[in-house]
Length: 360
Image (cartoon, rainbow, N blue to C red; front, side):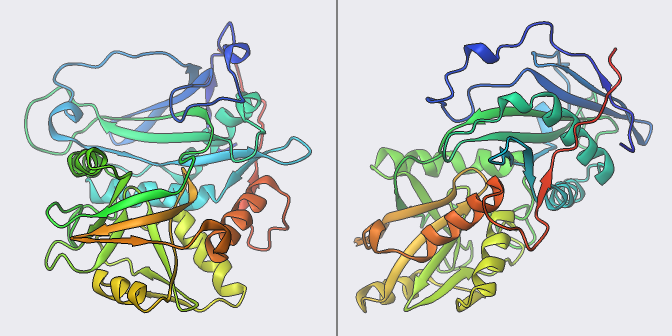
């Protein structure tokens, strides 16, 4: 441990109240959280506290100007009960890339990782062991100046809490291609996990759901032609045996699950293309009978199969899940690595270092 983290443990655990066989996503929270505050150019008072509400000033700048970022990660357990993290260093690096884009201070990677290990070590019993369940981890940072004025804050709070979760999507999803609203453009904040990106996506997602779909497929903001993401995930297409995913162009989040799947596919002999991909090309592939799979990829769902895509007056019906090879294979590989069932040649899986932390 490179960083001193004070620990105040909860007097009573809520663990016995949790039904781990029926976990809703994002509504059950573990016993503790991590907190650190940024003042005078440095992070201080790193600490673990019992999970609870906290006070915030009405003029806190995050409430008015949206300086807020977050990450999404998961912890799992090996078959012999060891808590495991999946690519935590890459999450730390992406968190800081988001911070830089939003004019916020970096969190030293050692502090980010020490906070994860300490928190997960303390709440390791909250990690579900049911298939496709995990302990979801939410690191986030927000501006905390008590000031009304458009400028970068001088004070920030960095926090991490955890939540045991079940599967994000219980079944394949139906998508509507969005031809009016835009998620992001190059030069914007699309590459950052900024809170405002998600706020701006809610109206088109709600309209799609009212029309009977689960999520939207985002197109570029210039021509409404080139595919970006799907909902809050990266997207993959299998076209005539080739796996194609949109290239990250500054508007697309550099997903860690996306990166992991690309490594796995290439190392196992799949033809993979990262390039601009138009919705017209997808429709043409469908009409030619060579659109074999479409799936989203992200931390929450790992892989989420797409069953239908609505574009203008067309409804594309994708092949049955049992006829798909690539997406299901990728999902099994990621889950196998995360659980320790598969050998990890990449060094992606990190056992949680449970430190002897000083209590306060």
